Amino acid sequence: MSSINHRAIALAMAVLGAGPGISHAADCNWTVKGRLKVEHRLSELKTAYGTSPLENIEVKVSAKEQVPVIGWGTWNGWPTVRTRSDGSFTVTNTKNCDQRRFKVEVQFTDDDLEVRHEHATSSVDKVKWYTIIDESSGEHAAGTTDYGDRIFRASGANDLNNDEAWSHADIWFLYKKAIAKAASYGSAYAFTGQVKVKYPHNSAVAGDQVEASYSNPTTKVIYIFRSNDGSEDHFSVDTLLHEMGHRWAYDHTSGEICLTETLLLNGNTHGLVDDHCVAFHEGWAEFFANEMERALIGGTKVLPFSRPELNDNGGSVSPALTSTSLVQRHDDGWLSVLHTLTTPALFIYKFGTPGDTTPKPKIEALPVYGVACPSPNVSFKDVMSVFNAGGQYPDKLSRSETTIDAFIDRAAARLASLSVENAETIKKLVNPASLVQPLDELCR
Image (cartoon, rainbow, N blue to C red):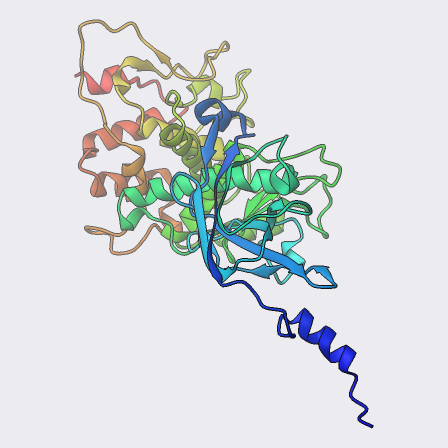
């Protein structure tokens, strides 16, 4: 007698859909669609945009169907797609006509940007798949299943209200806009390679009391800090764009290793430092944050510090910056220099006098009537151009050019909007010991 178990074979064939009397329906066309959006949690984005579509997010649809005897089978992945500019996605497939349940996952990565999860440093997979739909009941017939708007927000289902995923959606929106804005100025202004950012980040080595957000000059990865207990969280538009400013500078300068050197020696790269290169990079990063936020979201132009403020006469800049050499060794000093260079109608402002003991935190506009004097007309894009090679400068901005004199001279040589005479005026105005006012120099 044969030892073959005909009952077992019949059951196996039934499971596979190949047994006698078991046949799958003819193939059907399936479509799964929806729109992916974020209800912004960053206050500036929430005010400016409210809820926004998420473009070029990778979307993965998985489906499962009922299997005889067993019940619902395992998830089978379908081809991935990317969201369009309006956040919409459409996944199509041709499968048998049995009813199905769906799971939809998304991840924040493409050729330009990669948003890494909390444990990415110790993980092979740097970017997570976040689940936005995971059906455990009901079923869909063949044809089109439209899930409508799926929004990252506090009331979202599955990972749509996951703190990390929701934050990543905001980072994606902000960084993609910034990447596009830089690229819109021309290829010479664009980021080089993929921008990589990790949030939240908390080092296993450094204690929370000394840790901060940073952009690694060697790996070019951006790390946005959040303490273990959540009491300190750097998730903000300013910090995100500040660290992105560092990342942009790494593509357009040489010698940025100065940041690593100072961090290892002093444990900090802010405030008054010995190396002007460090102060320049920190000042530039904050200037980039100010100007990129204004370009993307709007707002008024940030003005330079007044001289008394730089002198620390009751102001917020500390320690006292009483000379040009000190200004170029302080990130707030460089921030003030770069905003002086780009302030429109500079002739109407008063920078104050060094001995004033009641300083205003920023320069003040004078009541100038019926006067219109030629002033520098340097834009954010123009300042970015100073970093690039061109004319008598065949290379990108070097470490030795991160002094006030060298940078302003390079700006005058590279920019049609800045004459040599006006460049010399800028040097006088940013000197906290000077008495020169813009009206004196520009309206002669």
